[in-house]
Image: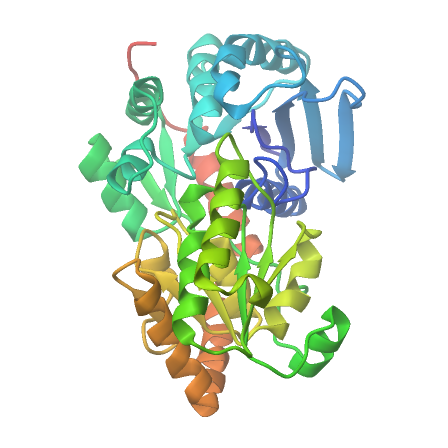
Length: 403
């Protein structure tokens, strides 16, 4: 049986998405690890210990463990985490000396740096998933430190396999980083259809205390990257006093609190503050009730390597209006399962929402087609593909580079 070490330095599969820096990557790591374990791949996720009271090891389910690795002070901001990479790498190496593995799978650039070093120290194949890319973020107005850009380039150059969530991400890796296309595998994330599936809208609204009025939904961390001000502006552009925007998520990162203050100031300025309901981050499986209660889900992100929120909404049969960026271009079939907006302008989002609200038959058809399309995305499929990738890596020569 293949034994796998998943590196997730800054994002634990045990924390609730939408809190702090926890988001889609938490869901990705947790669901993929669980599905890999169920497929026969022994999976241990190594996470930096962020709380001294955490147990060293947590057995999540048979074949899936989380190990907390001490690396620096417990309470650190995401911006301080690069200073913990050396300690994290050394800690994981000690763990792997006790429990050897066949493959390392690193998530995000911080884990990629650790994985790169461990690859050469232990002569192990390295699989890398980046989730976001610094050069992509820079193109959309979210510049990252040069340190991260250089690190990503090094890890991409030495990874034995680079996982891309979509063909759009493949193009970004090749164009912006010169990645070798023969080492890129497209393995889209999945969705847990047992939780995220079409359901009764009236029942969902009753459970959430929502009435029979237009409901727009935004799910995600409140940070500049996710574009909540665009959703607030779209609400104002609708000129529908009966419409409500439900925002599920909390401030995230160094700019999260400032972003929330700006959103509230914008809502006051536009006169729609009373039409917005802020809901704290919810347990992941409970989000399905919010999706089912919505008429439309807004995803106005500046960039997205994939867009799990859009997939979860689609699986629940709800049309999505999203920015035409990254993996959202692949995930949404424009005009059939939702709308892609080329201009990240509130008026453009409002126009798409207005079309859906004015034509319930169209909205229902789009939701139905979205749910059918979402059926092709499952975690078991992703795990099966990765199991083959891992097995193949153990039989071939590793990429060589300057360590």
